Image (cartoon, rainbow, N blue to C red; front, side, top):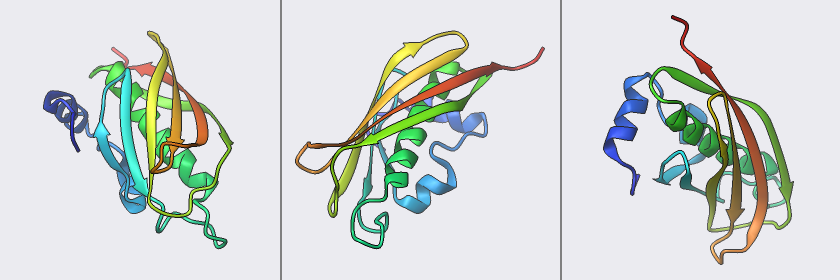
Length: 142
């Protein structure tokens, strides 16, 4: 992971929240930048393709939901947890090799809800998928 403030990463892990989790690890997702407002990750096309050779649409959704959820949890802070309540995706190009880069930008960072847009591109920067995720922020009960 690069460009990630260690206190942010440590605070996530300190809450028992491993950025990405088991599925992200299995898919080879690498975090390049993490913040509530702007995050970037990538995953290899190899190992995440359908039988016909294209990156699976579900793989785009996994990297997007992972990145959006991590960003929302950074925004939520130590006394809350963000959970996904809506995800939609539009796939516009196929990727067959190289890397899928996902760039996540906050559209709304509220007290109880976040909305992020994630754009997945190929190695040439061409958009392959656009995903929007909404997360509900659940505060700890006192």
